[in-house]
Image 1 (cartoon, rainbow, N blue to C red):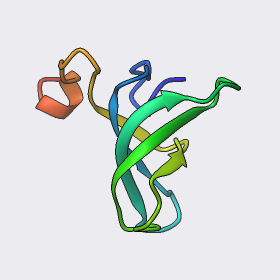
Image 2: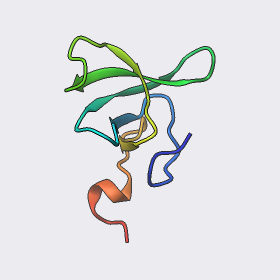
Image 3: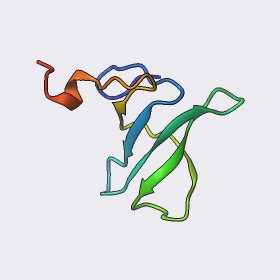
Image 4: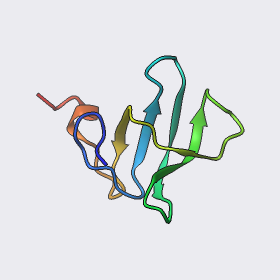
Length: 79
């Protein structure tokens, strides 16, 4: 799976997942379910505040890679 900018999403990445038809968002750390489906441990959300785990949506941005690096589009160096 890749994020909206084409960055591969890997386990341990910190991502922002947002709904396209509303102002709902989730921030969290990616892991993969046994089925291979990308999921996230939710750290912040305005969707379901009590939710601790959620699917990674189709509108997703990698904010920080598991190795600590930050994609260029987040730092403003893309272009």
